Image 1: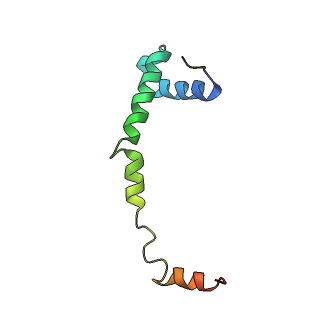
Image 2: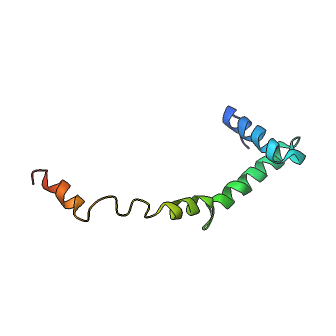
Image 3: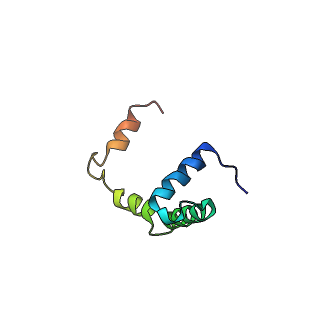
Length: 76
C-alpha cells in the first residue's frame, strides 16, 4: 500500500503521458514505473552507461604530480 504524495501523483501523471493506454489505471502505471526504474539501474542500464561514459573524461587535465604538489603546500 502506498500513500499518493504530490511526488507520486506527479510521477503517475507523467507516466500516463508515456503510456496513455494505462492512463485510467494507477496500479498499472505504478507497475510500469517500477519496471522502468528497475531496468534503468540494472547492470548496463542507463545510469551505469552514463557513469562508464564519463569515466576518464578529465584525464590529462592535471599534471601527473598535481596531487603531490597540492599536498606539499600543507604542513605535515
